[in-house]
Amino acid sequence: MTMAKIRTVLGDVRPEDIGFTYTHEHLISRPPKWKVDQDPDLELPDKEKAIEELGYFYAAGGRCLVEGTAIDYGRDPEALREIATHVPVHVVATTGFNKGAYYPDWVKKMSVDEVTELLVEEITNGIGGTGVRAGQIKIGSSYNVITPEEEKITRAAARAQKITGAPIWVHTESGTMGLEQLDLLEAEGADLSKVAVGHSDRNPDPHYHLEILRRGAYVQFDCVSKVKYHPESVTIELIKNVLGHGYGDRLLVSGDMGRRSYLRAYGGGPGFEHIITKFVKRLLDEDFCSEIISKIFIENPARWLQF
Ligand SMILES: [Zn+2]
Image (cartoon, rainbow, N blue to C red; front, side, top):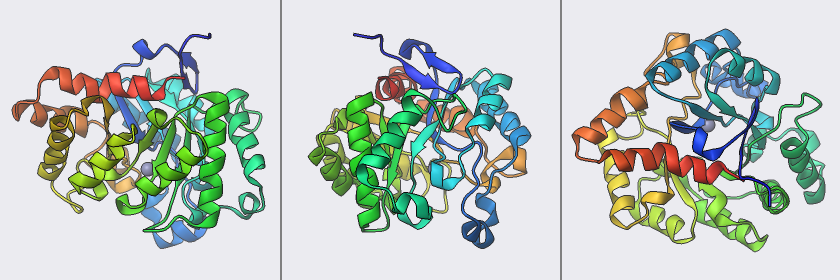
């Protein structure tokens, strides 16, 4: 039995050493051209700015960041490695794909087995000859539907997880199809205790969250600060629901600040320090205890990410 590790762009780290963690963020993203033409705010091409922003996270007390940019969204493993050499934060890179709308033609032509092979290769040997290894597998679905192409990636992710033990992160569109994704993963024999259902707070329905938790998966709230969706008071009620039902060890919280307008380094806000300096402070003010904070941001991420 090999020792449990968390796989970062600079090598493997012991789970007990990762510290305060954001489990879904973006440092470098280059979405498909048609998407950037529609919405240039989504493109995060600048290494220097990523280093600056990650520096704010570190200064606030952040120590590990899962970079959720997938293959079809312009992931840049070499840039991530370089960024991680400039700031003492553990950076976890992603293999896998976002959602069908972004898939390149070459992945549409691949079989489940071929996708499985690609995911396993990127986790065990590295991404395209860079030597940078991925530490999580990303899958995704569309609004209220899992397309056949998305189902193929989900099945491949489950198979790759069985081979490698790596954690899986699920993109849900506006918090839909999380349960159906878990059904597919389970049918392929995935370990749901290594699966996190992302964007779950985009669907602020306490019942939906409990259904995910009853399956043994992690529920992730990653739109903290995005008041355009709902105020943070809603997120706090959602957290209370999870804790009140005894699932405090299955909750992840992050910011998913994948837009220039969210990042201070690009002239936006509130930036990477927001959750630590403002949101955690508010949780403490609202009588959440420090043990719960360390569960959400240290122990749960360490348990989910290790393999
Ligand atoms: Zn994201």
